[in-house]
Length: 108
Image 1 (cartoon, helix red, strand yellow):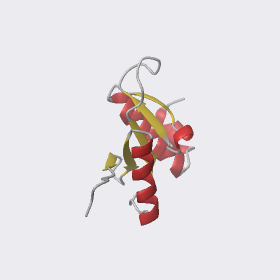
Image 2 (cartoon, helix red, strand yellow; image 1 turned 135 degrees about the horizontal axis):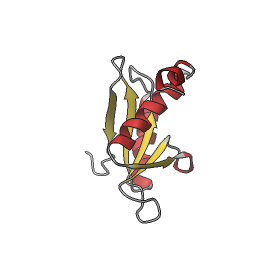
Image 3 (cartoon, one colour; image 1 turned 180 degrees about the vertical axis):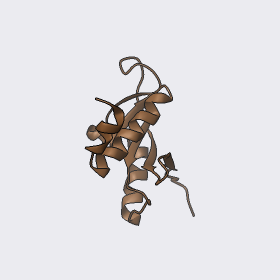
Image 4 (tube, helix red, strand yellow; image 1 turned 90 degrees about the vertical axis):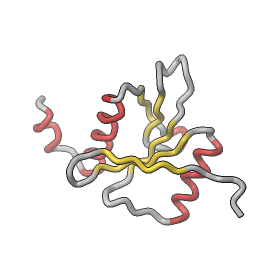
């Protein structure tokens, strides 16, 4: 099955997941399912059996829109699981984009 034929049959949600997965895989990361931690993907720098994941990825439609409660929960989830949190989306021109969240405990 050719890539163009394959992409015709994907829904937008699956299309975004495929492009984010392909982009991360192309950068040399190992990727697994992130449902255990409430994320779309978990990203490993090496073999899954050798290291812990360091990123949790949440996939969002483009343009990125989220309620403030969702952003807070993403940030807290990343802190509790000791992982960096990325919100990933595919722009209209087909590029993968990433937005990083970090929870600061000592804000005034």
